[in-house]
Length: 446
Ligand code: GLU
Image (cartoon, rainbow, N blue to C red; front, side, top):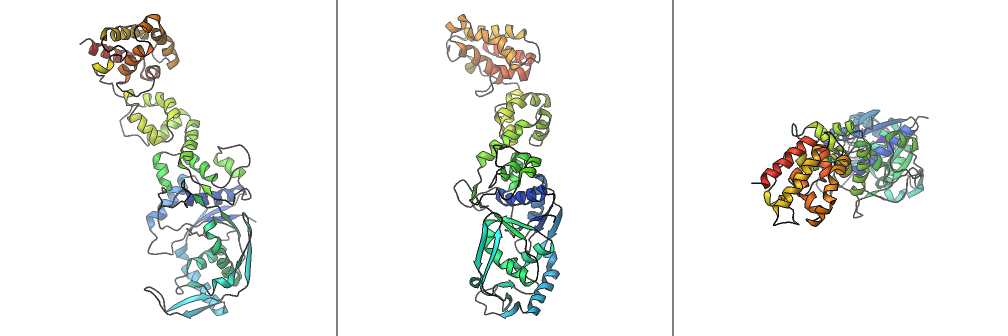
């Protein structure tokens, strides 16, 4: 039997990471056994469903790299729902009920399911047997009219018509299952298997929700989180591969995924952890790949690609998202792209405030030593050539290492915060570095 799973979101808002965790599990489970993954847009709430939310769902799934085998829109099944409502009424399993409207919008007539009573048990793949006393449900409403089935009815029919074998969804739907089983049985439909996933909490242990500030999934894309990182992270919200591995590619996830290892207890969505997983995936990218993914986050024409490429090791070390990489490039690393205008007062080593001559002579020595460093040298090579000057006995007497390294770093960067001077030289290149030091000397000699 081919496995068929579905993701059945309501397009009534931008969905957050917790919603997509359901899609991820349904997808991985289907693909683990070569099955199909269906998306059914549950748009029967006409007033709240919006095309832009639906479009955003498919955009997010495509970005996460979860290809959809079949798409449905619940509202397009209305004729089928009507046909089956009529059938249930004809069978006597449901009936048109006269109601006394109590509040605005209440109907005078609805369709109710004739509750057979007793208990109903289903075996949840994750949670085991779940029994519901159906008497408590009364003759529940399955449609407001023949053309307006309620959620439970539409879900029960569609799951069966779409030949869904495994209904994988959030634990908040456990209490809906009994009604859906009753409807399926009354229609003579087979029952799918159910797996109710653990709820996802936010870092303050409240249920993750848009209302309490959860981001739309696509906001993570805009922040420069990699889809492979998000997929990896979402897969671990309530599941793990049962070994030490923390970083799994999509193929590895498909291979490792099973429902049996899904936990019952709730999972916590932790953005800090997500960003650190993202940093791991960013670091695995080749420099070319890193550059091409970063490009989308950069202002047009602002940066020279050669220098960005040279800064990639630094970005990989420091940035957890591509937006952070952009912030570094436009902030702390902006000195790589624009020659600084160092201030005279600040060039002078703090250790020797009254002796600009010392700073001048330190920079002159560095200039001489740097001339011997070939263009394109590594940070280590620059350090090897220059560090002895900062460590020399003479320097020690004249304010120590800092009195040499500060003017150098500030001459190169014009900033209080920047990478170390040797890294700067390796990225700027020798001749650009020499020009910056000469400029600083000219300022000091004014
Ligand atoms: N449309 C429902 C929701 O967005 C899901 C229904 C289901 O998975 O059975 O919560």
